[in-house]
Length: 231
Image (cartoon, rainbow, N blue to C red):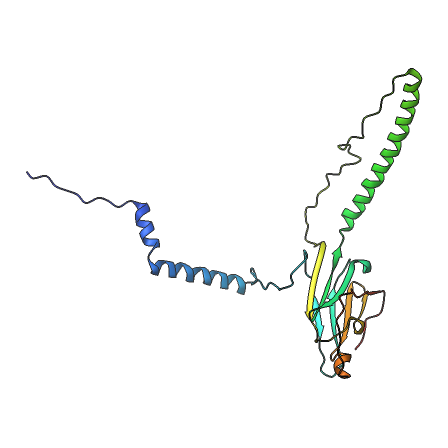
């Protein structure tokens, strides 16, 4: 009886590796991934990213651009609720109007002010205690100082948290292209009810008078509590 020989059984790992290297398999996986992404976009669960060249800041305010061909001006309206006038800056540079600033979290701001008041009160109390102890110790010839206030004091430390945190705070940035030659002196801005309205001429004054214009990098100051600007 002659011995029989058996062929080696390929391992599952080697089989999968060779299967993955098959161009047809990789093409099928790529098409399936593209189809899934397309389905998510159609369902509104996924949005394609559109990064801007000048993207800065933690968030970008929404904007409406009013471009009426019959009007000599162009108007941009920026949605900035909760942003104080002193925290908004406008600047023209390289044919772009840039709007930037910050929105402060009112809860964190109030909490910081309260903690600062508590800390100041404790410092004053500690200073009075130190002065009393120094006077008493000096009479005994053994001066000593009191320990610093405990930073873990419940009156100083807050453990409050938010179960829902959807609002965006911190720095923001948004930019829009403006006609070449626009000077910052030609741009007007006003804010009311959290809506910033910025107006600039469709045709720069320099172009209308055939003169040269130099763009300054000095920020534009906004006017608080002004009515909506009209073209």
